[in-house]
Image (cartoon, rainbow, N blue to C red; front, side):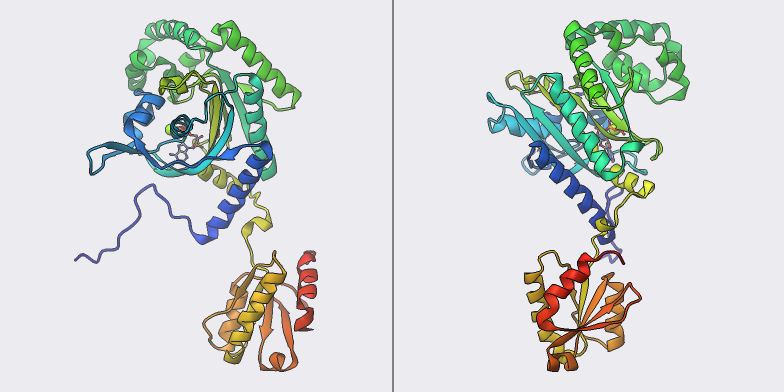
Length: 431
Ligand code: ATP
Ligand code: MG
């Protein structure tokens, strides 16, 4: 048997303890925010039938053409690790009758899988938080989604560092008519199209607008703009949305080349971008997809949603150094039996304190060791206080508080008074 160590799959990351507190802080902010806006969580499997993604995302997209993890299971069924969450969310909502004569505001979070070239901010297993709403067709819900995300950036200290880009893709008829204009324009400039774009010319010409090739930038800037050729309803929808954003004081940049990588979008599309992460600058993206439910066999149902990439947002929090101290998940107290006679009394005292102080983060020293090594562990734990319990303390019914991060004399307290004193000490964060 080979004893070579087995490693994680390229582009799929372990989340180590020192990082997970920041993730928990971020996820906690999102969870509370969703609840405050009246959104309910939905959880779906990470594997679906391959056909679901082909039919929803579109055959001629990066995801379906080259990024999906698709395999045959033991029954010979073609399954795919989900590359995004909208399709699964729509499938589940349809399957369980959530779209029948009702509106829904849902959110989800979890891993997504795409076989891309791994680099900073781009992984093969990454995590998204997604929000999807169903049954609401007006611009008010589009605006709410943007305001909800803006509030999240504000809470996280990111708002000054992100830009909202906005566009409208109009109705499918308007897009079809525009597509012809666009193809005619690209035909005239065929010699300036790169290989990828030539291939897309017949299959998905709108995606050419999204090309990052700098050599094509000038030619693309001169292309006709869909926003100038919208149907009147989409134009009104977009005008109402921008009016609401103006009234709410949310700045945006109109980006006529914002078309999004998935087929199912129409009307409003938006992205929140940052310049602080290099070329992986989109941290949140979404839009309206009124046709998707019907495309997947349901009744016509207006829908709009977005997804944000957790890794990129965590990177942004770290890059900008806007992580609050209390997001680091630090311990308040390290409870230290000085010798082995104090082991059991310390265990019981720890339980009593946790019961009486529900906010207290207390770690009990386990595993014995010399006094010196115990104190070392107390210091390494990151706790602000150590609570020492030895023979002397046990005899007198006291405990000793040592300040691990402050230049302060230790205190000897009666065990009966510990709860009151500790809660006062911990509330005093001035030190
Ligand atoms: P990009 O243009 O960067 O490839 P995308 O259009 O493929 O993004 P979406 O499908 O809209 O991305 O996904 C929404 C968000 O999920 C992105 O804005 C990004 O923050 C994040 N995301 C997408 N793909 C990855 C990935 N491979 N690794 C990490 N995050 C990702
Ligand atoms: Mg992509």
